[in-house]
Image (cartoon, rainbow, N blue to C red; front, side, top):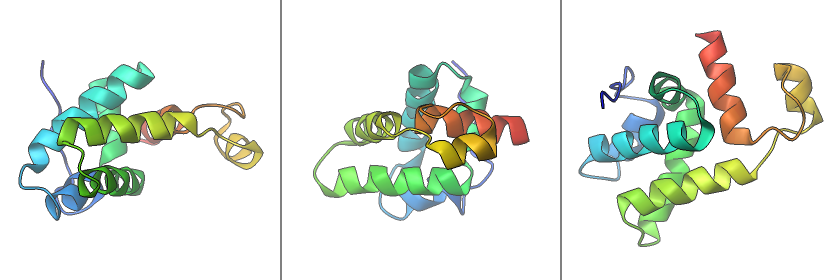
Length: 116
């Protein structure tokens, strides 16, 4: 499987986790695979999402899991689950054209990919 590499080593997901983990590539790979599997979107679209400011915030959630004792894969999985539990409200639905109730993570991946 060919996992796309970050195009944003200093910012976004990769740069944020690199400040807190010795193996940011390991977390990047887990995040790309986990997001693509959970949303049904492509690996490329998951990577695009992770390279944005939204990816940086997702990384903050992963780092929180690491600081609470989770290993890398578990921290990514917990963040994916949490971000899928949230959903678009009326304002985000209006801004994006996606329906209210769209899982937050899935919606952001779709929006980032569409804007790329």
